[in-house]
Amino acid sequence: MTRIIMCGCNGAMGRMITGIVNEDAEAEIVAGIDMVDTKEHCYPVFQKLADCDVEADALIDFSTPKILDDILTFSKEKKVPVVLCTTGYDDEQLAKIEEAATQTAVLKSANMSLGINTLMKLLKDAAKVFSPAGYDVEIVEKHHNQKVDAPSGTALALADSINEACGEQYEYVYDRSQVRKKRDKRELGISAVRGGTIVGEHEVIFAGIDEVIEFKHTAYSKSVFAKGAVEAGKFLKGKAAGMYDMADVIG
Image 1 (tube, helix red, strand yellow):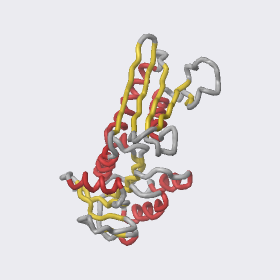
Image 2 (cartoon, one colour; image 1 turned 180 degrees about the vertical axis):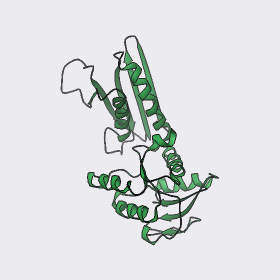
Image 3 (cartoon, one colour; image 1 turned 45 degrees about the vertical axis):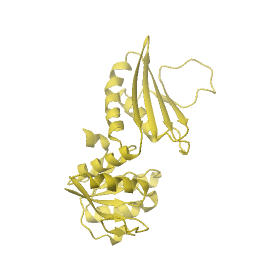
């Protein structure tokens, strides 16, 4: 049984994770951290992580970058592995995360979905076949109209997985409208679509002469990220200090 502290337990993702864990015989949430205790959970809720005196095997954070220092301090002092699902860290915070990983187990991923991370693994193998054969590579990502960043962090992670497999040979191109010239073989195009309530859709295209191979992942709800976070928490139980990602969880 993996005992989990849920940081941001009253947020949308925190509630979703609570529901998933309630149906998981291998995990339980033993404490929550949130500014407001709604009294709806079967576990104690603390306003500050420093006040939490409950023993746990992992901490899952879906809150805000503002409390990163508190999370890392708690993780290092209590030796509780941490799954960082929050995004938007600045360079200074990223450095702190790397430093903390020398003292405790830290898992950070651009996307918590098991499907997306399996896709990254498949893309590395595909790229090793299609790239030397001269296939063009394009990524198209689609998200809801409230998403402020473009391209998505997941699209960039997919591109990085391909580029890594190909020896960093590609240059990312986000907008071809300003230059009138034919496509360079070293380009990896990334296009962003924003509209409606699309949760997340990523399509990777390998286009060759007379054939096209497409890899596609569609998230129909945010539960796929919640499920991945729970699996990450279970994976981290008992792990030694170090930096981990979702590739470790699936592979």
